[in-house]
Length: 159
Image (cartoon, rainbow, N blue to C red; front, side):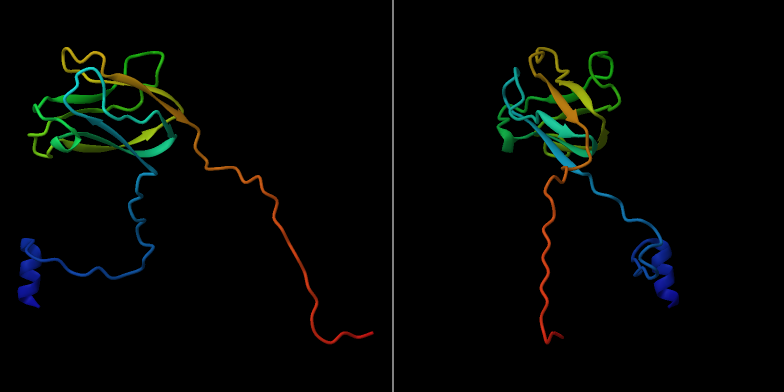
């Protein structure tokens, strides 16, 4: 027990956690994953979402050899925070290239609000790499189908 305690203090091992499951809420996963990809072109993202639903989201930006970047060209995915015509409450500025420490694939957790977000690449000469993400209200789909019911009486019946 003394050796296990010493190893735990030194960070060389971990212990099992016991207790009530409801002591602390588990971290909540993002409600949606939105992915942008880039490659060799400097005039467009290869893929980009057009719409999303308000709420938590994971934004993924990949600019790697897997997405067609054969020249090690860097690109950014940047959300504008200064354009008055678009939402400015989410700060995203990801620089990615195939040779970086993540292999060109990066992600960030954000909370989107209804409206539009202007995104673009900040690398000089890449001015055409831009677009608008439209975010709609969350809340899920509305239930418009009436429930169906039925009843059946079985067994011996009194006249």
